[in-house]
Image (tube, rainbow, N blue to C red; front, top):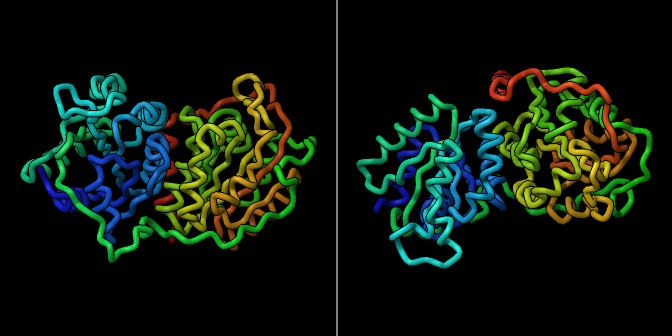
Amino acid sequence: MIEADDFLAAAKQVGYDFFTGTPCSYLKPLINRVIDDDGVAFVPAVNEGDAVAIAAGAWLGGRRSVVMFQNSGLGNAVNPITSLSQTFKIPFLGIVTWRGEPRGAVDEPQHELMGAITTDLLELMRVPWMPFPNEPHRLKQALAQAGEVMETQQAPFFFVMKKGDVAPYELNDSLETGRICSVHPAEGAVHNGGSPFGHPPYTAVTRTEALQAIKGSLDKKSCIVATTGKTGRELFEIGDEARQFYMVGSMGCALSIGLGLALTRSSQPVCVVDGDGALMMRMGAMATVGRLAPSNLIHVVLDNCVHDSTGGQQTGSEALGFCGVAQAAGYRKIFSTDDPQALGRFIEEAQSGRQLAFVHFSIRPGSPKKLGRPTVEPPQMARRVRAFLSEQQP
């Protein structure tokens, strides 16, 4: 058994200063200790997959991240681990608990099957792992080994934590647990225009035209994260730039990537261009974004009520008020329109006003008949975004 201080001190020494994840009783000491430390950031995710995506965004912004969650949620992280971290070769240090460990501590029945397959599942995803270093003298070597593997393979590495590996640690009652990051209470969002459900009548506006308006109104130092499918492909066709991150796979994770980026590159605008279907897959991320309220994040949802990239099936977004969700989540400025010029003006205002902003923009279904795909490979794309951001002046 080690103290939470032991692990955190060793991790900070080798550069880990950004932590994210979801709770587990096994992880309670580590999470509490991280929250109590002024020298590191902790971003509480609403699910395990979002935590992986947040860490990926933080890596793009130049930070070394630790992702922590219970193995019952490992299945929820499979998609972003395999189609985001592994595909883009974005490394992070993971800590997954081993509830239901075979021949281990007696646990609840829901952990039995996942406990039996936890390490097999990591290996099936080609994720290297080792037992959590639960003795002080093993910490330095274990972190060095994990770091070497991550550097060589450009992939995540996991420590598998058993019950009792870390001694209990309670939060310091004299500290605000809201220290997580820069958390501010919602201050009455401004909702300009649009219907209560944010679905103005469809016009002739295409996704490409919307993307042109977005790109044309953004600061040249900004970073654009385009959601999976036609959005990224059309943005690439408009004009490829090093600041543009085109999602592939990991559908619904664009917002969490943007959050990780915005928190680590607070002086630069970050624009996430989402889709209605993608956002609905992981809409809980809006709660995390609203809670932390990064002032440099602009979240645009292009809504045509269909899954355009997979054949045009309906998403059901016509029955959902995205603007109402954004307001409830704590976004500061909220806007709904189907006018490209109004969209551009709002984005310009959001950049200068430095407030977390949400834009619902209604577009028509469909895309160009001859639509190419980004020719830059995902790992190279991730590294050029990282390089672009590192070159920008604060």
